[in-house]
Length: 204
Image (cartoon, rainbow, N blue to C red; front, top):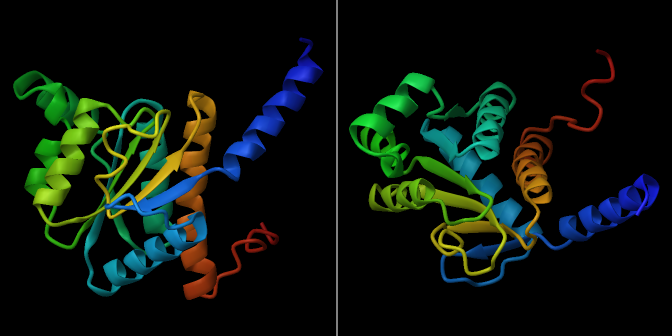
């Protein structure tokens, strides 16, 4: 296959995946993507009104997505959003407690009832992300998960809202997890904060 044919196939597969993103509740009930985003926006509105915090966790590429999203949520959305991606924290917890608790341990310390935790895992099966989900639930936080690959992955039914990309390509899953988070924030800004997310940078 030549490069042009590959790009055509890649584009087709990408757009198929955009239209295939699923959103479910904790019982596995299908919500529809738009309804999942709308419910997520409501969570953000309540979070800001109650002056509570958001924590976003993920490994590797998902950690980069978490950092990017956290900055956007606090800078553009006015929400106190945090990650646990500091290298000293990651190496300390991994060495002293164990990598499976690298996010669960700080969530145990910092998260409070009513806070929002967003857990990102392409496979949905990373042990440390599963532990983070379980800790968030035990701390009575609101939980949103983003996963991909197999539909029966371990975190897909753990969140109050679960976004799932039904594809086995890391590239597509990671890009679409970023898309979901941007969509949630931009929907809040556009629909609830009256900010024109489509044209606000025209003057830059």
